[in-house]
Amino acid sequence: MNFKGRDIVSIKDFTKNEILHILDVAEKMVPIAAGKEKSELLHGYIMASLFFEPSTRTRLSFEAAMKRLGGNVIGFAQPGTTSIMKGESLADTIRTAESYCDVIVMRHPLEGSARMAAEFASVPIINGGDGAGRHPTQCLLDLFTIRKETGSIEGNKIALVGDLKYGRTVHSLAYALALFKARMVFIAPPELQMPSEVVNECRKMGAEPEIKHGIDDIEDIDVLYVTRIQKERFPDPEEYKKVAGSYRIDMETIKNAKDNLIIMHPLPRVDEIDPSIDATKHAAYFRQTFNGVPVRMALLALVLGVIK
Ligand code: NCD
Figure 1: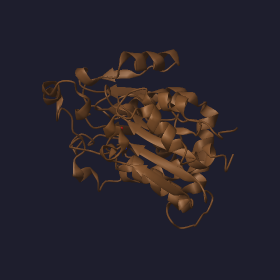
Figure 2: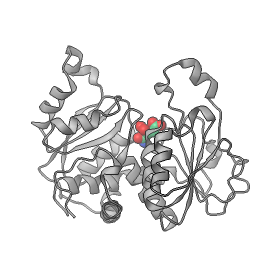
Figure 3: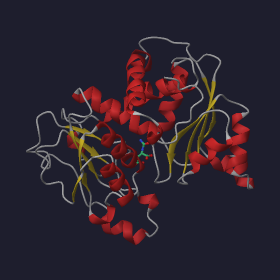
Figure 4: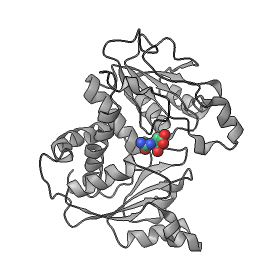
């Protein structure tokens, strides 16, 4: 298996075996991610982190991953301070960044922008989220978390809850769960249901996702994957107001849940999960957040060809 020089634009670009290999490499990175072991694996390498959209976890965990492996980071999180403000194109920004680094991590509001950047760049492009499109590195850390918390991916019934229309994390995850043949339920208000192209794609792969509107019966669910309503992606603020606050997970929601139910969330949460859930054994979202570091370490080391 060779990942050297590869772009990470969509989870669809990877086979099941490649995904499992990434998760295995990530598992070995855990002590370094936690700061318990030191590493200089990426000493002398530079990662450019180009964030055209707000981010907390994706950017910080990529930067932490690079630095924990002894590498360096350049980049911006406020495109307003760059030549983009003078009218420079994305293509030129990418061509510039690549002449200063070995790998580029990019988040951009435009769907398809990561694929376009990959066409221009000779260094690997890692998609840190492209609009409502895809979020492959989040997907890998979600799979890593599901496997770590429950022992397998395929053995679970997984409910994706919330804004399935605009949420890029669930678009990537639905595809990956279909690949692993996990059972899926898509729970969302009708206006925010999973786009039909994602549902059809899952069906073509042999998955039979259940489509539901309410979160009232979750007794047979093993993993509840909750998402935020993607306010910034609504073309009309009135449409957002209609669905805002339409679902919330609290102690009442999980009263008949399985004892070993895990609740995940890519974060940030707004009001979808009541803070009273945080103290329960079901809450896996902060462990999930940590898992971003070892998974992104694995990806950086693999695409830079430092490990195979
Ligand atoms: C998500 C994103 O940016 O798509 N956050 C993340 O990367 N952890 C989810 C979201 O913004 O709701």
